[in-house]
Image (cartoon, rainbow, N blue to C red; front, side, top):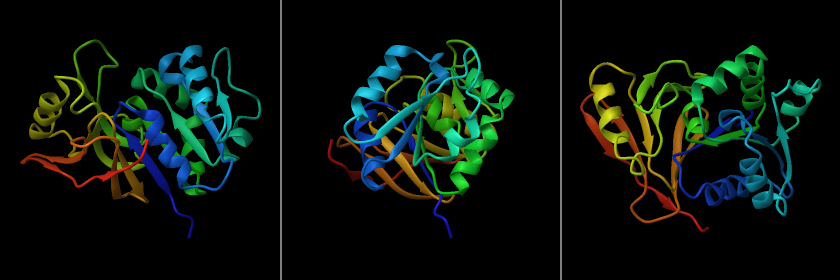
Amino acid sequence: MTERRIVAVGGGDVIGLWGRVLDLLGPSPRVLWVGTASAENPEYTLFVHDAFRDRADVRRVDFFPWPPEDLPRLVLSQDVIVVGGGNTANMLAIWRVHGFDTLLREAWEQGTVLTGVSAGMICWFEAGVTDSFGPALEGMRDGLGLLPGSACPHYDGEERRRPVYRQLVENGFPAGYAADDDAALHFVGTDLAEVWTMREGATGYRVGPDGETALPAHLVAG
């Protein structure tokens, strides 16, 4: 059976954690960068390309002014798909208009590793905590649903993330996972297999209506 993997990064040292994702694969993996959430910011794209160009065959997918004609072939030929941070709601709307959400599920089911940070973390879940609609954080139940429950990035990196997520879940929002900056949740299938961290003290959490539980984390090299 094909192994399905998702690595959900909370924030912080994303290059180090994405480098750990590449360690799961063979030499010169094919990596697809998806910068939709940041409106395909060219500086963000260049940053990612420069970080991985010596380790991987890095390509990108743009949706402006329109997606490439060979979008299915491009997506389904990758070893890793990396999704950047930004506006989650806008990103998901654009993906769905062009059928990219369906292609992501197909890629995952055939063994492509999916990963991302912030918006690129919560998009894989059924629900998440987002600032997509303004500066105040809100719960959004519009994720891709590859992973059950909800997610919250930047758990120790932004002051309001922890209390807002805890309150949402206490009030009936789907339970799920949080990740500090510099931490990542590695899922095999839909089960959490391991938490990776780039620094001591940063980790992941299970968050439910009765509170949160810190998870043991494996320190990885930068």
